Length: 384
Image 1 (tube, rainbow, N blue to C red):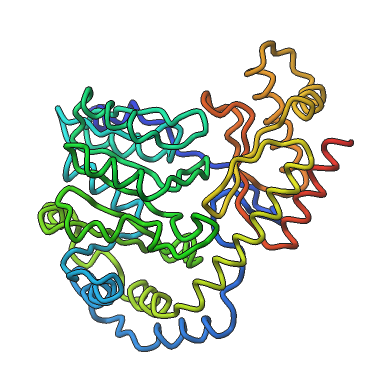
Image 2: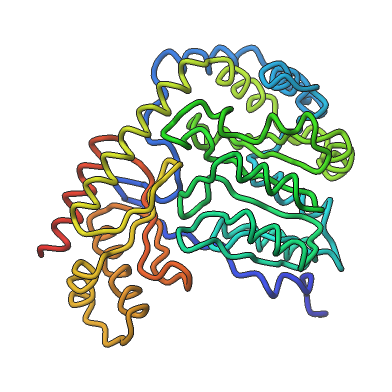
């Protein structure tokens, strides 16, 4: 029997592994929104679903939803495309604009799937570093692009997993200065700048007069529809003409399209939801800071936390590790905190072993009750 072999590039891709705890009481590891949608929105959802004829294929490219997005943002509906989450669109971008002999630049540290999608498309991954505050240095990125000459530049704003937000002016400077397709991944933009109007912070309005820009958004985060898998992109006609060639027909199902449209039409729902998350996020950040953690300023629905020296020393002692050097001690301390939370059925995202984020954990903003339990658990671990 002949040996079954996959594509060569697959050997360079690590499995996507996320810790799971079947009986976890508090799940704050995937940047989902933990607040329930409420009875009013549940009713809208049910009504939207009941109207759909499931014996019929959905529209080819979600034209009704694209038409609504066009009206919402004051753009031609053709300038929008849909995906099963904005993550799918990121993958399609790499296939459509990358390939052998082409470079795709992406931030580091950032969303781990960037490198995976780039590698899958047989493109060359070219990472650029964030600055010391984990923000995008516009001048440094422009200089980087002049040297490396990437075909595609990915910018994650606000950035995951650091949570850091960059002002729109800085993003616009990059867009106007580089000779590449600029992909602005704005999955968390609704939470940025203290939860102010997302459209004041977004680069989406620049699509109207920028040929080399693609802006990606999702309903998984602020809208709380991670299980639905729906995102959208906005770009010039030239960008969309190419991107549509790699999007399968009927690839977003009827129920998803109907529910997404119902949620997008509910303006007050989003504002109230974002305000609640931002309030809970800031309270959680304050409490963690009091317990001896460095908490990066966040423009998202999550926090990246790292133990300060005294807290690091306490956690390292509990780890029983013999590691030497500040970085290795931080990794051991972060692992100890992660495992301590896990033992208390609290699941966070473990970045403690990341070479650029030693000792770090990413904690999604939970409900007020969940956040209180997280703080109590951290206290128990430090004092126990």
